[in-house]
Image (cartoon, rainbow, N blue to C red; front, side, top):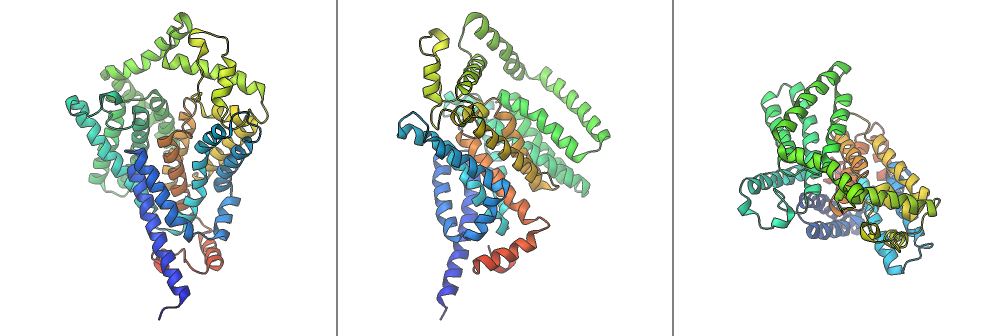
Length: 432
C-alpha cells in the first residue's frame, strides 16, 4: 500500500503536469478569445497553487525580475488608501495591476518544468492559424462574420493582432538564423517565409501604427544582438531597401502613416476629434494631473475622476475625460506618482536584464519586453487584456526557462528539493 506522502507526491506531480498543459492552453487561446483566456487562467491557477512551495516562491519574490511586479501591485493596493474615489472604483483600478502577480508564479513553474517551449510553440501555432484566417478574409471579405473589426481582422482588434504577429515574426527570425548556421537551409527558408508572411499581414492587411514603430526597434535589436558591425550595416541597408519597397507597394501602409500628420493638424488647427489628436490632448492633461500630486499620485482608480476635474468647465473636444491616457507611464503616474513610475521602469529594466543572455528563449523574452516598452509610449498595454497577458506569460514563461538553464541552476534545484521534499525540479525524476 502506498504511503500518504507518496500519494500526496503523486497528486502534486499530476497537478503540476496539468498546470503546464493549461499554461499551453492559455497561450493558444490568447490571440482568439478573452473569455477563454480568463477561464483558462483561473483553471491554471487552481492546478498550480497546490504545487507551490513557499521557500521556492520566496526566492523568486526576492529577485528583481519576480519581486518588482509584485511591488508595483503592492503600491497600487496602498494607493487605494489615498484615493478619493469610491472603493468599488478603486478596486476596478487595482484589477489591471493584479495580473502582474502571475509573473513570479510562472517563473517558479517553468524553472522546474521542461514544457516551456510548448507554451511558446502553442502561441506561435495559434497565431499562424490566425494569420491564415486573416489572409482569407482579407482576400474574400464576404467571409468575415464581423465587419466592425476591420479589414483582415477576424477577432479582437488590429492593434492586438499586429502586435502578436510582430512577436512571431521576430521570434522566427532567430530560428531562421539558427537553422542557417546549422546547415538546415530548407527549414530556414520555410520559416523565413512564415516570418515574412506575418510582417506582410502587418504591412498590407491590418497595421497598427504602434506596430510600425516597434518593428524597426526590434530589427535594430536583432541586428546588434546577432551580427558584427558589418552585419549590422548590411542588415540596415537591406532594411532600408525593404522599407522603400513596402512603402511604394502598399497604399494601405502609406495611408496609415500619412494620416498621422493629417490627424494632428486637424486636431490642432480645426479642433477635430482624431486618434492622434486625442493622444496629444490626453498626454498634455496627464502631465498637468501628475504635477498636481507628483510624489505618490492621486490614488488607485482615479484616472477618470482626475480627468473629469481637469476638463471641468471646458467645451468641445477639450471637455473629454478618459480612463485611459494611452501611455503606460502616465496611467501609472496619475495614480501612483513618480514612486509608481520608478517601480514600473525598474520592472522593465529588470526584465530586460533577465533576457540579456544568448539563446532563443532569451530572445523571445527580450522581444516581449522591448515591444511592451515601445508600445507603452502610445498605449497602456500592461493594462490592456491581450497585450498585458502576453507580457505576463511571455516574461513569466521565458524568464522561468532562462533561470532554469542558468549556470546556477543545479544549486537552485538542490535548494528546491530540500525546501519542498516532494516535487523534484528535475523533469527526468519528477515527470513534470
